[in-house]
Image (tube, rainbow over the protein chains, first blue to last red):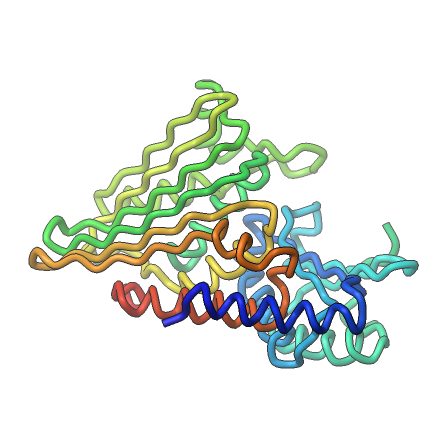
Length: 121
Length: 189
């Protein structure tokens, strides 16, 4: 059984780490979670991002869910926002594609152009 | 939508879009009453009676600035509940919030499965760190009741400023939800 005491340990560990590298968020991921996105598998896309963050121990990445924005035919849609760079929008995402985006884009800094449906704002 | 937990995710997103800061979710599986009930209660902007009526109409959406003016989320959820001789009830008060209660007949042949409740809740909790979720799952059979309660406000307080996307926190929430869902037999409903 998980208890609040486990959280205290996590907090202490995370605070140590943040002292070393600062608490800044390097990459922000926004998963489109409108009705059409959900129907096309956005929940599994979200889950795969969370799994990859946990498995690869990525501590400078943030993931949020947001409503749809008119790209219904390309759902599930994901925005990747990095400080000082144009926003990259990936479309028709699947758990497999998410894994590739995590390795290529988030870890190695190379945009996966095959999946990109829009850039900039 | 292939399962009830996807509908649940869809209505949670509605609550978030209505600026809810607190969302209460209850899933009740009552075998003797042959009932599967989902309740979602938020403190968002709420709707007046006309909007409330319109929200159940497939050709209405509150999402502005878009070409296709349809909103199928609520009408499909309602239809799927009514297909099982269940019922769909939505009440709202502008400035106070919205309460949604959806009943399915548990053993009805047309009832869709509950589906992956864990991933719905995990994504919603972590994807909306500004919202506090209070989750209650309860399972009753032959006078025995198992219940699971999960409150994200307490977790956030314990974490101080550590984000919910911190890897160990994701695992913590995932495991807690998994155990709660197992203990209340919600995994293959």
